[in-house]
View: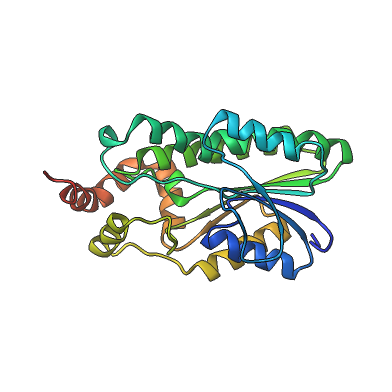
Length: 252
């Protein structure tokens, strides 16, 4: 798919990875609009200031985007919590699901009608390998990304034959400010593979251009995704040592 002149809506486009993705899309002469909590952008694109962590915030964003026609929606915005599940605050738990799953679903619903009517369009959901290999201490992040993968599969089947494509892209860990100091310490102790944001941005834009159905970034993680789907017990065993190392970070 040529991106020149395409109207692309990107959530979380003002963040580290989002900025790199948007800059690449602009270089390909796409017309980019960013939804973000940031007050300004470091690149030349339209900005819709919005908060996707509440139902009211999502509704306000949709009121601004719904009257417009969009060729591509990129659901990138995300929240992450690393730690014991019972220590996550109720507010943060709800916000995580709102940003990672509810907002993408509502935005896809908003733009999907116009795409179907025109017989062309692309909904791109940026998930995570954590959504297929559900890691301990990332319970809400992993489960919300798993939901995003399920949403992508369901919409792909629902839009079959309509001209609307649904792309699901699952990077492994990426070196971005989304990672807290504890996540970085966990990555160090467990030798977790972490990709450079430039590389991930390039892979994401490539997948958008080719409208790939599902893309998993990183090996051997992409292999573990397949193993976990058919033999999760093997992955339980493989991750047990790292799970214990993570628990040590939160020992009182």
